[in-house]
Length: 261
Image (tube, rainbow, N blue to C red; front, side, top):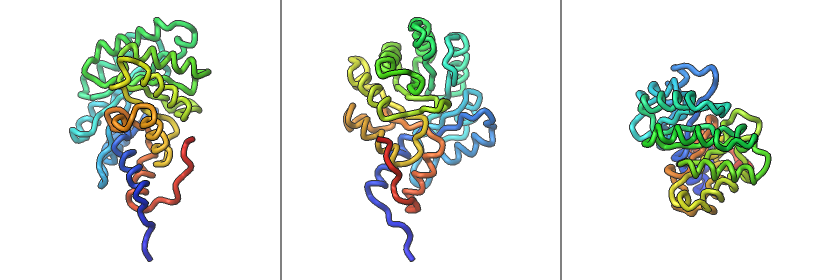
């Protein structure tokens, strides 16, 4: 008896998801053996992920265990997104000294909601200045923002302060990435004169299947063009998505899950 047949379009979606995946472990109980296993999984028979995303304290450990082509991302000001500039800078310093390539920084979204945009901007500005050579992915925590206008305001603030990516969520709140939030963030990138040709988008929080990832890729393509659907401008932050990617590419996957639309 033959196994499940590969579906060419699903294979292409899965390969794109793999190439754009930030394979993530940000659990309170993470240990070096957990991160070692994460790094092992980052390079598959079908290719490698874009990055491995970890706590700052594991950034050097991960960097030592990954090939040069897989980036290390680590989180800063995470997950609460406070306004303590010194604390955010301490995270950034650990990440930079570890040889990581990317910082996933939480926007002080509560300050933004309270009307204190200056305090929110100060954290972003300080980290951007302290780590000029690192890719800065700003987490807006869109699931906690009450409406599209607030999402857009948060996005524009991050872009004005030099974000290289807009990221939806920490994954620590009940609402993570949603198609509508993605559209708002992508619209902000497209409309921003300094961002439209260079800034990327990262969907994080609840992206579990190749079908989910393909739906977000379609939104990026619609807003920013085909040239933006590459790891330099499109990422998916997830832990469990790799299982579905490999199931598709190995020909073991069941029927596609419903897309996120």
